[in-house]
Amino acid sequence: MAARDIAMATAKVAAEVFTSSRAMERIEQDGYTRIDPFRIAADEGISVLLRPMEKLLGAFMREDCPGILVNSARPAGLIHMTCAHELGHYYMGHQSALDETIDYGGQAAVMEQEAETFGYHLLVPRPLLSIICKRKGWNKASLSNPHVLYQMSLRLGVSYSAAAWSLVRHKILSYDAVQELLKVQPASIKQSLFQGQLPDATKDVWLFDENDQSSVLEPRPEDHLVVRLKSHASAGYLWRADSVEQLTEQGFTLAPLTTTRLLDSQAVVFGAEPTLDYELSAQRMDVEQPHPVMLSEVRPWMGKQAGDASFHSRTHFEPIAEGLSRESKRALIREVAGS
Image (cartoon, rainbow, N blue to C red; front, side):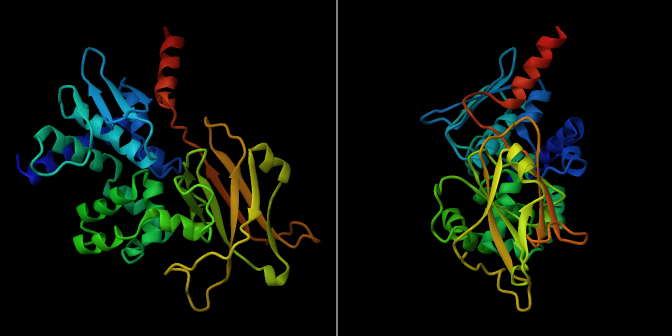
C-alpha cells in the first residue's frame, strides 16, 4: 500500500476516533492542550499497563480482551506516542504486535506504517496545532524557533522530534527547516532556562507565561516549572501568590530564579517590557484534579490593589508510573462499582 493511501486511511480512522471519543471537547471546553491516548484507550475498554522494559517500547494484545503494554522507563512524549501507536494497531484491525520502535520507514510492514501514521494523526491533528498557536500567539515563524517548538511539544504531549516531523506532515515547515531544528538538543533548551544550572536535565522544563492563562497544562510531577511574567520591579512591584496559604495548600512554592536566563531569539525585542522568571516547585500534589495557580504583581508595602496585574493558570499533573494507567484504574473502579 502506498504511503499516501496509508495516510488517507489512517486519517479517516483517527477522525472517527475523535468524534466517538469526544477528545477535542477536553481541548476546546476544558482548556487542556493534548489528546490523551490513555483516556481514549480506557473509554474503549482497553487496559493500559505501564512497566519498565529493556527492549520493547510497547505491545498490543488483541486476544479476547484487548490490552496495551507501554514501557514506563521512557520520556513522557515517547510514552504517549507509544500508546497511540498501539491504539493504531487496535483501530486499524491488526492482530497482536510487539514494537521495539514506533518510527518505521517505508519498507516496514504495512501494519506498522499504519500504526505509526495513526499515532501522528491521533496526537497531532492540525486543528489542535491551530488551537495551541492561537492561545500562545505563535505563527509559522515562531515554530521555527527551537525554544517554541520544545514548548509546543510539551503541550502536545509528544517528543521534540515528533512535534518537528508533525510540522512537515502538515506542510507547515519544510524538511530542511526541521533538519535544522533537530540539530538543537532539548537538553540545551532546558539548560538555557536555568543558566546551565538545571538540577536534573532528564526532566522536562515547562515555561508558563500570560498566554497560558486559558490552558490546563499537564507536566509530570517531577518536571520543572518556570513562570515568566512581565516585571515592573523598578517601580517596586513583585509577583506574589494571591494567598501564600492557598499556594502552599495546593502543594507549591514560588521563588524568583536567581540566575540571569540566557536570551533566546524571541527574547530580544526592542521596547518590550522586561520579564522575570519564577520557579514554581511542586512539593506535593493531587494528581486527580487540576491545581490553580493565582499570582498578582503588587507593591509589598501596599498589598493587593484594584488594577494590579494578575496571573491565573492551572496545572494537572500526569503520573506515569509502573502499573495500570490512571485512566485504566478509574475505568476499573467504575466497572467494579457498577457491577
